[in-house]
Length: 305
Image (tube, rainbow, N blue to C red; front, side, top):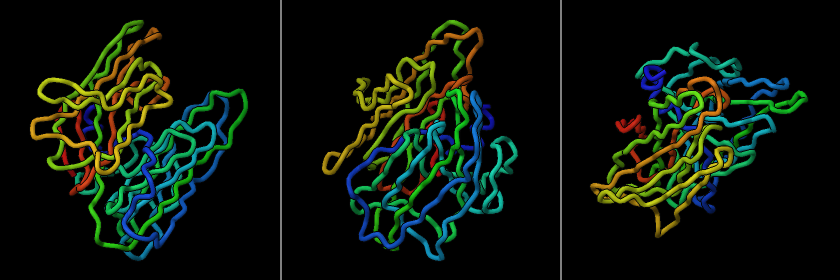
């Protein structure tokens, strides 16, 4: 799993994104509606579905707002961009190791949420760039904990402008591969991440699974941690937002510290992985600007793309 995670690089953001005012950079010039194929999820089933599509635009766009919905039975979904399509548009299949990945066409995290309805607005003068006919794919995690079949689906609305005068928004994603919670035992994992110089964060949250007691993100200043996000309900992660002029900034020697504590109530060792039932995760995810790309902190090692 660690090898696959390192290859995927920025593929692993799975956190709800905070609403943040009207934001953006000028008037909205287009709104694109994306709806995944719906299907029936049987009681007790947990599945990961991947849907491949592209942005229906012949010109480059600058996204200033994203709004999503998920039906009951949806745990979370993630949207990735790629330079070239991984599958023909409309492909809908079980996710797995069936993608042909390469460093020249690595999927890059764009948007994610674990809330039934959510919205991300960019601060004034900022945007997320999307290329004309931008290839996308949705990774959707579904769990049916009810006694009845559920019809499940997710949607994403992308509001954009054709303006080219904006500061680029980037994602900062942490991911920990060192999770190994003994049967009936506890574990705490953490990482310390350098942050790109001169950037401003406007939202941050955490993502983990059901054995989490606490997940947090902190700003480390001269060895003293200042709480940024503190989640004690894994299904409803805390989201912290910052607005102008009080965006979150880091000094030259400051770091982002993230940490998760777990209690394993099963007879099996729980490792890092995708399943909310069988695995755990420890992530902090934030949006920042100005950005030249996205940033992944794998354990405590930082990669920029």
